[in-house]
Image (cartoon, rainbow, N blue to C red; front, side, top):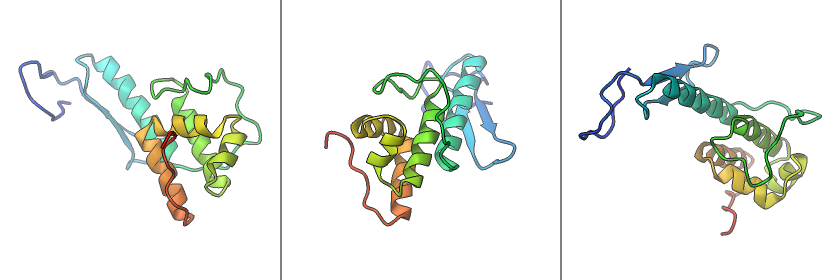
Length: 146
């Protein structure tokens, strides 16, 4: 698939763009066309779809956190393979703790500032957190350091 966007001399004119839709939730999609390599675009689209699903779907917070090699508190970048899972858990905790970032951070074993910084690093996750709080009638979260 060839994706739209700004043109120019170095525009990728090869049809290597990828759009993925989840079979159970077809409204959610991941799209990527940044690379000339279809395989890289497939990985990027899959990563984006995982993040979209993590932000949109809420599940009960697990009794025990999965035994995974969680990165250090300040190292959960959007490119980390576990980032969508962390975002899902962070938002599930926020929803179950009635919008309290301090209580949600405690459930994840993080400081409140680290929790907010990691959510803020991903626009979709930050928007989902604001949506959870708005649904509960709470004011928007402030970005860490503001």
